[in-house]
Length: 174
Figure 1 (cartoon, rainbow, N blue to C red):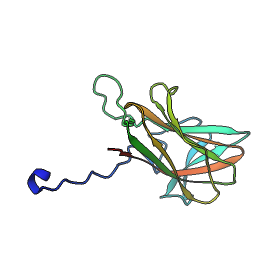
Figure 2 (figure 1 turned 90 degrees about the vertical axis):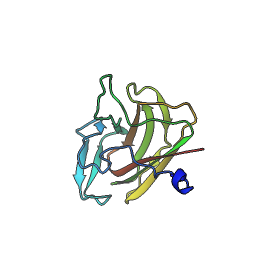
Figure 3 (figure 1 turned 180 degrees about the vertical axis):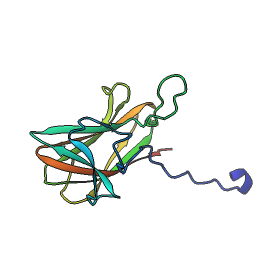
Figure 4 (figure 1 turned 90 degrees about the horizontal axis):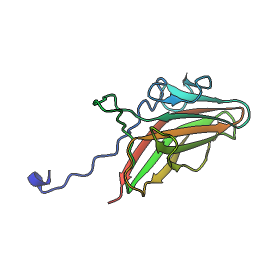
């Protein structure tokens, strides 16, 4: 655009590469235990639906993850939307609340096809009993990495967590 006007256009705003972030269903998310993870209605987070995670027993751990697999398969394997770029800062925000104190949420970036190579794990986030937006930030200093998975784990004992409005945005240092 600067050729025509002499003005350089600003960078476009970051977009959210995650799909089904308001949990209208369980589609696009992989669930560790479908007997404890479900979609619920009107729980006062964001929109009509939220994810409900029932943490029964001692120090139970449930998790969800999204690889954001592209629906197009161009003849040679799967393509993923989540990548880590050197010098980029990733900000994950979400809304959550718990029925009682003691629930913890953690997020991590790991290699999609493996799950064993972890590039980042957030600090534990203590979930309060009232609706709140939470944030975790990661700056990727290593080389670019393709085909990533975002995994979110829920920990606690005899508790229920409500989780919604998941947004992942990136900004790049120049």
